[in-house]
Amino acid sequence: MGNFVFHFVFKILGLFVLALAVVLAVLDITRSITASEITLTPLASTWAAISPATLLAGRDLVQAWTHPYLWDPVLTFVLQLPSWLICWLLAMIFLKLGQRRENPYGRFASR
Image 1 (cartoon, helix red, strand yellow):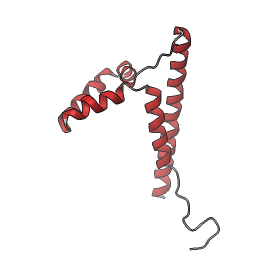
Image 2 (tube, helix red, strand yellow):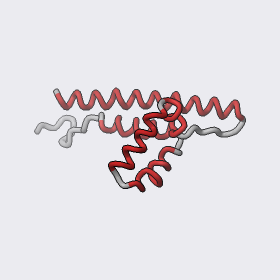
Image 3 (spheres, rainbow, N blue to C red):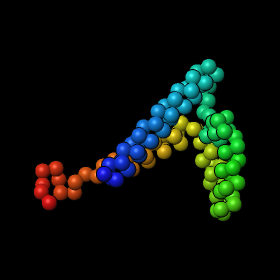
Image 4 (cartoon, one colour):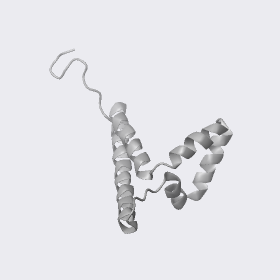
């Protein structure tokens, strides 16, 4: 029962994040068409528009509990990537975690 819940939660979470990635990609495509040039919204801008306080709190948390260089070169690079790309990658990770393992003995083999 617990294994089923684990797979179910990660599948639902993955599908939700995938839907968010599609919405963010459509927004970037719409902005690109209206601007007549490629426009990609970085994750930092999307996050700051939704909840700027949590972005600053996340920065403070990472700098306080980990090495300070983790925030500046690593996470600032990730925050500059397009938001739809990060959401798509997270969705693929969640969907992979929610995928059931194939029977190692085959479909019709007995154990």
